[in-house]
Length: 303
Ligand SMILES: [Zn+2]
Picture 1 (cartoon, helix red, strand yellow):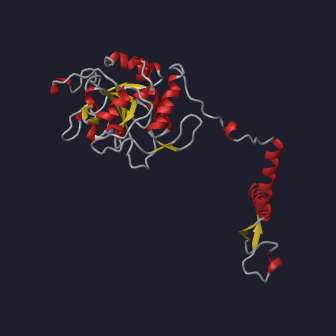
Picture 2 (cartoon, rainbow, N blue to C red):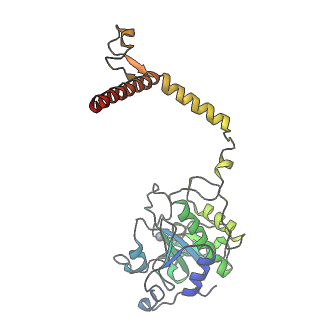
Picture 3 (cartoon, rainbow, N blue to C red):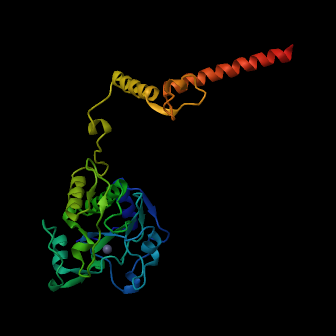
């Protein structure tokens, strides 16, 4: 059980965790508490979502959608990794939660059963924080590395504040009895990991790892040297450069001009080709000829 974070506590917790935070105008007092007559809290878990669209910040923070007034989450997380605070009160994000799934997050169980409507339902907006992560949710749109990193940080910041474990972190598809599929999709990478598919289990593992470190911690990203221990010496680079230049100068690639000095060398070949070396040689010859002609012309004009 926990008393919901105040607006100032939200900002402090996220910033301490290294999240770049923006404040949506009016967010401190915007919520669904007064309109519903229901109180937000005590809070028991964190719930994660994808927006199923791009650029929906105004929708999430304020406007809502038909039949579901805003705010639609406490935090809107853009692809850039910037988090926008939308509400510190009650938000319309969780809908009905299956009681069996909810209990597993509330009790920080090691496993989380599939949501069963038969177990009963509760109003998830009473008891959970929510973040809406900007993503099409089509299993093709990629969560950029910066976005996933911020996502882990946001969940960890709230868990750290309340003293929760990562087993308090759930995903909409794990609690919904309304057929929600979010969040899902490929993640660009995280820490030493390259591309991977988002899964709630991996996400909780990443939040757990983060919580084992101070809030200022950042996951290690391998440097290019560690990625590829083969490093090139100056001698190697010169060898490669010489091979490239040799190819450029000797490969037959250029049409020879009809008046080329060596054109007669291959009369039987209607299309005669020059190597790069011949092209360069011909260029120098022609420039010198022009230079001589111009010099001679200048002398005549002076005379
Ligand atoms: Zn959702």
